[in-house]
Length: 393
Figure 1 (cartoon, rainbow, N blue to C red):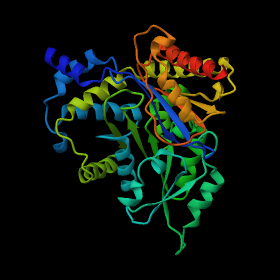
Figure 2 (figure 1 turned 180 degrees about the vertical axis):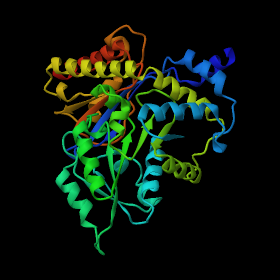
Figure 3 (figure 1 turned 90 degrees about the vertical axis):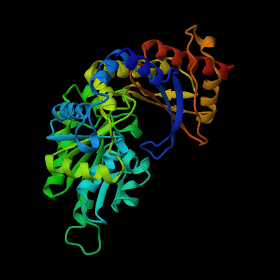
Figure 4 (figure 1 turned 120 degrees about the vertical axis):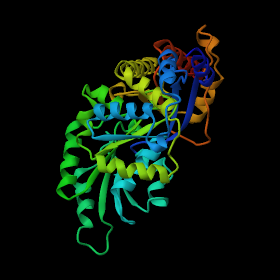
């Protein structure tokens, strides 16, 4: 255990990163994301003890890894599904789910035009699964227009010209809309519509736990309106890697075969499963804190009353804050934030930096992950205040 504790500490980065990347928005306006995250996770004690138990037990490829089985059983109970399957990434989890549901090449997948599966997963459903994805406009809350959804579902029924819709994909929380939570009644209506026409529903639940905490309901209450679900452990839950697919027994049996075909079979996966289990153990407490920090950041930016930046705190439902930038390109704002040292804002001894991508943008998205403390949030606000004050002078 002592050796594993040292290895755990050595393997986790010590540097807090403040980074930015291109994203989308509900209006089709590109955004910039600034992510406040710390991959140290402060999970070393719990993780080391689990590693001592699981690190050398069996091969997950042969379904003999105790750690993976414990994680999968725990997650299945949490999500209210028959079984789950541990996979390396949520992108793979989504692709496997689409391939399980859409067995015929040319099958149609309906989804939002700014959802992660459509924009940020390299079109894998087309290039690998041979599935035709049809994007619909996202409404402000990350939802889809139900009348238009029904029109597209029924268009291919009995038609020799149109692709046949076999799957609807939803994303909860909806990241491009600023971490908005899909309403429970909306999920129920989509599921009823899908069942009426023999279509299945997959939930991209990369941030499902954020949605459950924001709604104050068990995750299973959300998942019950879907036929399959994915869940990511390396976002708000803070694990270094890993995701899972959840659904019925026969669905997961096919998912296991597809995981192997896609190169996702892992050997001593108990090491990774241990970190995911630790992330699940205190998810509710940690995510509530993330949400509170995001709300504090939004209120703080609003209180600065800068003509350069505007934010709507009422739209902050989980761990994301969408900030509209006027008067200068957001990448320029990010460069200025990067140039401000922590010592210029507060004597915290922490360095915060921004990783930039060369796109002209009109907004910034800030994202909180676990173990970003209230102190870190105040530091981020201080950097923004410093830069905005400089711009005024």
